[in-house]
Length: 228
Image (cartoon, rainbow, N blue to C red):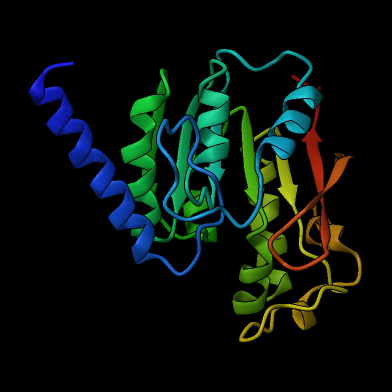
């Protein structure tokens, strides 16, 4: 390794550590990152990725992924590492910067950008531009701030544009951490967010531990029409 490479590598590690310190939480491990992570992740991600990949039945390489609320990019990069083209979007600019930094360790095409999930964002999406969409543990925040009817309308638009979604859903029975109040806004049936959609099929692919105490959240595969 040249001195220049060593200097670049050190600068990269310093940027990653500085970004980790900036945020309130480190929700995910850093995918393929070859150095010790300065702060431990609040939850694992490989368990979810393995279950999701298994449910895809081999339809992975060459597919296009839209990962909304991508956090530190673990799920996006997992599937890019297996041949997908991935677009990760997060509301937090610190998270986006971290994703871009660590993406150097994963070959393939991964793009990360800042954005907030909204009906306008979804309705601007060209139908058929993505094969899979991920919404992991983030829709409860939208329900709290925008309401269930807003999210239902957004899911109508999204399922018309992406044929297969994977959604990890918070439950009304959860006890949120101090300072959070989203649970009382959630419907009794977590799948009520799709109540106004037609022609969908649902497959529960598993329940997974989270950072919210001794809680497991369901991940559903939501598909329309003929499966890819």
